[in-house]
Image (tube, rainbow, N blue to C red; front, side):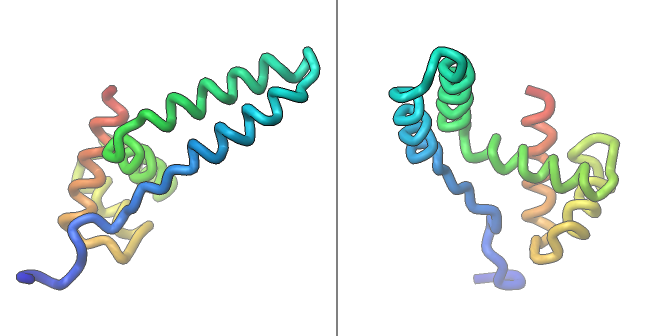
Length: 109
């Protein structure tokens, strides 16, 4: 491998949507009338999250990390990449650029 040996994408998307959905469905079976609307809404949110592409999930994560680092401008700007690398020092420049692009695309959608 040519380069510094870092992987192409260091952020792995972990999805627990199926387990969370199952727990919510089980809770819905025994829920009273007051709880049902909230649990039904929660199930809808889980279903939406389960269908999101990995790039969108990484983009959301990167956007949160960039904003938490104090950057308020465009998410694909050089300053955003710097903020992301300060927040996550293990990212290579290439990884941070890709993640900031995904963050910008997610924000624009």
